[in-house]
Length: 316
Ligand code: GDP
Ligand code: CA
Image 1 (cartoon, rainbow, N blue to C red):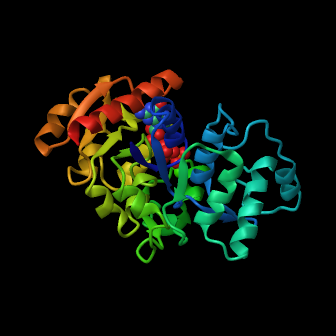
Image 2: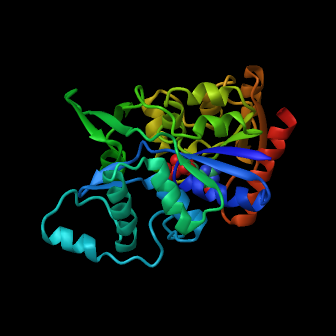
């Protein structure tokens, strides 16, 4: 079977580990969000692609869910001694090597998709990892203070520096309108037996991937099953509620599914706590299944992935 997954960072990477365990013989293609990408100290950093690559390749810091295991921070300390900015983004020494090589290859004129393939030759994630686009797309956030003064910051500045505490008036995928899907992306969707949305941020991960022209229509033509990142009215980790509020979507499993809509989504896995969302979603034509959705270990995560695949098969 061919499985194509739209992926953000930590939530997606953990789910993908379970999916690989649940479907060891299937062909998995991962379309990664690049809207979180940022240039720091002259280096191109792709947090979501790297989180998936390190997690599936065994190089992740398992407690954090991002960054490399057994990191040291000498480069960061040296940069701080120069007063280099920004000082709010953490990159470890091992991680820096990835960004240095990526930036070197970008400067040589290679597309991000080819570079990602090159990096994956080392990590062997066991999936085909494609960036959503080779064109630079950056998520920016419009902040509005109490005097209605507007400032625009990179998503990372809002998320990491401000911890999403300042409400976002608007979230924009800058560059998406004129971007194209990376080579292989539309094909991986068109030839998929099932498309999965892992428990990723619906706005700045899945939403950003869907904003690349051509991707939404390609996905809409397939059997799509999603896994709710919201349990009992709250994100499991992180601040996805701040992103949902910015686009006027309540932080509930049912509202996220309704936001994707039946054109896109055929099946939706919710946590047992959110069983009742089936009543809201059945009239829309979205089929709901409830089960424990906490990715606490590999068996639990594998069971979630298995349930998503079973539901897809049922709906195909
Ligand atoms: P990011 O790019 O690192 O923020 O990662 P993603 O966009 O892939 O995933 C973030 C989302 O994963 C958040 O909205 C979390 O609520 C969700 N999430 C994290 N852990 C779990 C879990 O164990 N179960 C479920 N259902 N969702 C989770
Ligand atoms: Ca991300």
